[in-house]
Length: 328
Image (cartoon, rainbow, N blue to C red; front, side):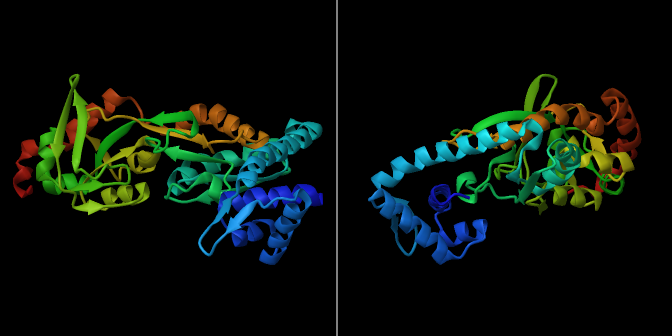
């Protein structure tokens, strides 16, 4: 990389990450090398760009002006090189932040086709359940599930999935099947990462919203954990077709309370605020939008809902058999 461009790139990433050492690791350099490069940039421009303390790195007024311009220049260079190579010759590393469960089930299966289109591109899957600062972490884009916590993000909706109540046949055989949302007060319930923490579950029946205050017996901070707990017979859970498809198909869990409708869950692609997405980020986002709708719905489709409802009600309306005496 040209020294001048590398100096700009190191400066931008140091500001974004707030760390000389993190920037050094990303570029495969030593921390002193990063410090010297930025010092050389300051000497060349004749202004101080950064204020460095033991806790943080911040920009001076001149550094803040340079930051915006430098981002535009580096992105323009990347776009020019990509255009010269052609749309199928994107290169470099695409950094994608995403939740592990969604990434494994929905995104990873789509990567072979994306790599076939862009054989020179590499991907860093930054899987984490935490919602990181995209700019600080150096992510080109992120995939987010549920409500977006920050309205300053530039977001595009990818897909949505139906949510449902589920439980293991063994649990229903022991405790009986709830027939209303209010019945869940007498059941063990499993809460997941999407629950708000107010212990109130809501669902719609016959056009009206019903709510029930509950005290979860088990809490899980991952969707995979919720499904695993339900399969183990620990209680009633809510889950999306994304997460429950395999367990439903195998019979490990069944859908209950089928006359209720839960709000669907949404998936979004999110770009860091304050900068234009790179060409490789836009290409990946376009690929996800084009493929998730078709492939995803085929995998998530769990048969005819009305047919499932009749089967579930027929097989698991155990309260009529007097088995609810164990509920508490």
